[in-house]
Image (cartoon, rainbow, N blue to C red; front, side, top):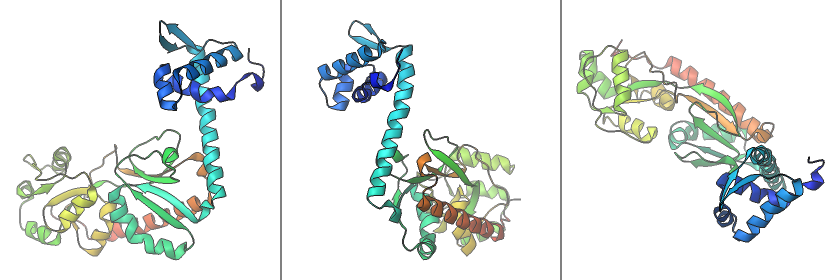
Length: 311
């Protein structure tokens, strides 16, 4: 039995973690930029020191056993806490309180966040935000980001997530397109150039009892580009209501229906951050400001001109 921490050779734990994950000494050596012999010696030293065999050897192959998996879970947690502590210490030493590193999708940055940044600066002139817009899911710990704005259902492993707002899909048109459709029967929508995902449009048609099979003329991997195309009159689009909030308020876009299309797989927006950041003053400031602005957006959406083309 392991009686005290003096028996645990801490310097071997990073090697053990990697070997446990890969179950291959040579691959672990390559990843850690060590020799095969050095990795093998560290695993042997760890097993000898604690008096437990952590891997089953079958020829030259390794298979982690029950004891190894139990230790692996504890080591992963401990090393992650050490990594988090080191990052926190580094931030503290370099005066991180003057800047927040934020990652989010390009569409959310373009359509919602950036138009509100002047109000953020007015409220927090000494707190800068580094904005990283990408459609890819960023590893906050690995890439050094403090917080993310994400859309989906979660959970995100190792991170704390706060639900900010739900945003269902709405059918949108430019004022000219909406006016053209006013005198047309609802089924005429199937003959319009539709923008977005065909399956999602099919669900929208079914929700409204419309006949026909919608065949979109274009799809987009970024909702900001889709909304820009709708504003320019290229077609009718389905998009997140929140991303269209400013355009609906200003009359640049109009809803075609009072009904929304719920999408449980991706409709919510979340504030996501490492748990140790929960009480960090800059994050608290950002959280409060986001909730304030989202409440304002929700009020604006309620007062926006309702759709009338399809009941």
